[in-house]
Figure 1 (tube, helix red, strand yellow):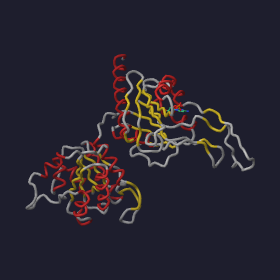
Figure 2 (tube, rainbow, N blue to C red):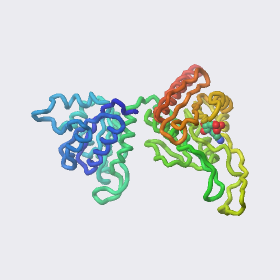
Figure 3 (cartoon, helix red, strand yellow):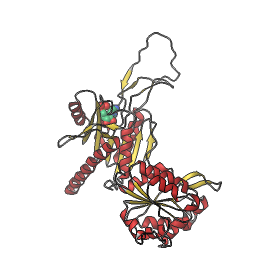
Figure 4 (cartoon, rainbow, N blue to C red):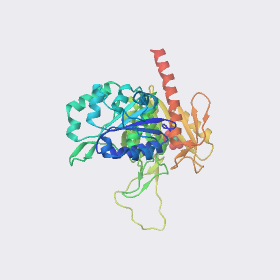
Length: 406
Ligand code: C5P
């Protein structure tokens, strides 16, 4: 969604990771972007321009001069696109951009660029550790360019260390950050997601159908919009969202402990987790054996995390979720009152295409003050955008009140 209708310039420089840039191009296009590739001469030693032309459906720009070159491309390209990503970026490219050198098409485009830039370095570990390279990267960051940390692992030179190009999905996520409004910059946001596991014994537990998708989408989109995001997640099979601090928990009580510890320093809490309301009175230390025809378990209520957090609230915005099968709005409003929420996201989980496990959701956003906002069926990422729009507005109102009372 962040990419719909967006045009990205992908700069490819001459490192072995240039082959991974083809996958970056493919994923950007898969996400809805149009991609224009610019390759340095050395990059073409590793991958042919034809590969990128076939993937992007656009002519690849490879040189400043030549009979069929647009004479103003070196200025126009870096100003027309929505964002620029250089992946992989060699130490040479980084040094040239830091020093203001424009001796080929890509470096000249970078000199004239007015759009947000992401540099994805990939190189040998010693090169990465070289103070000259680090100094150049610091200069780029000082000028507002974003730099993605390389990943650790086996390198093409045989060594193991820092210097690998991050996985294409992570690069795409970092580009999504470049394209998003930074209206949550400086805000600390705590998101909970997923189900909880309440143990009967070492191998069995009580849980629910939550996949964690809505909470992870919230964490992802909040990071893109500039927030400092912490995600407290129950067990899920989802990858950790890029840039987000993740705290993995199992039970409702563990989740409660983490949330209460983190809450005081937050600007907002979005409690998307489907916390189990009950747990077995006792978790058996040994596996329960099959014995009788019938079996009964005694459950006890888990603490309500949102209710526990309410007395700790100072200026935080707190958002709760209500997944209901009946009387949606009445139930949601009751929870909003009981849990002292600023906003509640109500969803009817009877529909097969909304709620648990699926990628879409149909919700109504109910603020404490103001009219409910029913939303159509949207992707969970689009729902996250709408929820965070409300959080941005609530935070602004809160800031206004804090200034007035100061
Ligand atoms: O009462 P109910 O479980 O339906 O409330 C849902 C909301 O309360 C969700 O935001 C959920 O994360 C939160 N909750 C909680 N602690 C619980 C149960 C639910 O904070 N023990």
